[in-house]
Every structure is written in structure tokens, then in C-alpha cells.
Length: 64
Figure 1 (cartoon, rainbow, N blue to C red):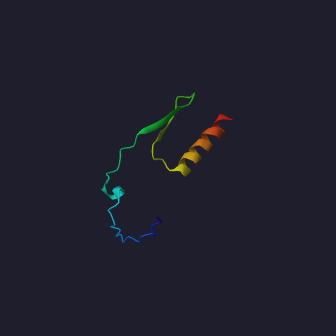
Figure 2 (cartoon, rainbow, N blue to C red; figure 1 turned 90 degrees about the horizontal axis):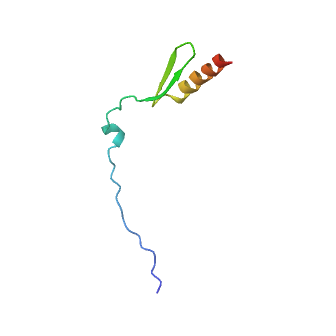
Figure 3 (tube, rainbow, N blue to C red; figure 1 turned 45 degrees about the vertical axis):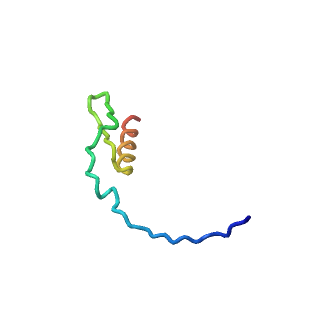
């Protein structure tokens, strides 16, 4: 009625990572922010989060 646990040998095969195969994607515009004075800030997908935080903080201080 009760089967004992079986040990099955397996072999892991290292695959080439898909990131190595991909060509870099072209940057796509994520957000365009326009100021009252006519200047623009363009933010693209893939931006470093620290750079994005810095830009947004600077824009927030300009608004005050």
C-alpha cells in the first residue's frame, strides 16, 4: 500500500544565460515632464533608480 521514497539520479546541465544572447534594446521614452518655462525632462525606460530619484528630488525642490 505504501511506496517507499525513491531516489532518482539527475544531472543539471548549465545553460547559456539568455542575457548573453540578447542584443540591447533601444531606449524607449517612459515619461516627458514639461515645465511652465518650456523646458522638458525626458525619462527613458531602464534609467538607474538612483539617477531617477535625484532628478525627481531636484524637480520637487524647483516646484516649491
